[in-house]
Length: 265
Image 1 (tube, rainbow, N blue to C red):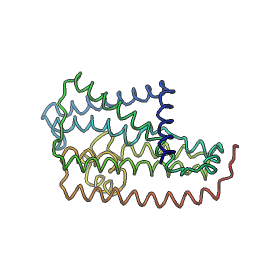
Image 2 (cartoon, one colour; image 1 turned 30 degrees about the vertical axis):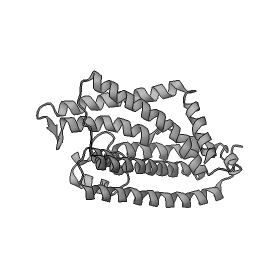
Image 3 (cartoon, rainbow, N blue to C red; image 1 turned 45 degrees about the vertical axis):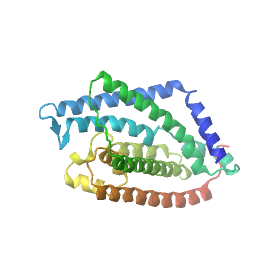
Image 4 (cartoon, rainbow, N blue to C red; image 1 turned 180 degrees about the horizontal axis):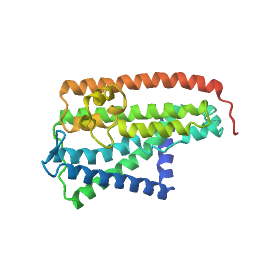
């Protein structure tokens, strides 16, 4: 475990070496946060609610999404795995006493934690500046399920993202599928709007896919908009998709290793 803790510490230090990239990424998230705030604020002005969400719920949804995107998605532009495989850098990990999966998990965990701290500060500052009320959940049972759901969402996204990056074993153009994956994920996870505002013909199929359980589902738990049984079922779906994605990842990993030639060394 010490070696992965060292990976975490080195990755944490590395984040501060590229301050401009980090700052640029946070500015993008602030722009998205403000844009969504004013869009949803305008939709709730007339009746004080929209699509079954009260004004405080929809505003809380927007601010919570900013926080969850930071800790769950981290830097979606990360393509280190793809780059390392394509350039042959991956070969050195085969000779190191580390598990490549966990190495990348802890390498990205540092970036997620820094983004999380930044997102929380952003939410607090803009909540004060914009003078908005944010719903504070006080039910410890709901908060417990919310925490479990967020943890599972982090694991689910990482496995799905890791799987997409492993396509580099089979194609040098794996960045394309990764970009497409991130684009679909943004909309399918509820990062821009609550999925429940969609027609049932779109909403029901989405709830059987893994994307809805990355952002939309955890926020719905926090807001208390799902029952105890619905929360349990949703968490079971998260575990199910983690296991399915993990199994597929293991298969792709084994086949990828057989195809890997260390090209670029």
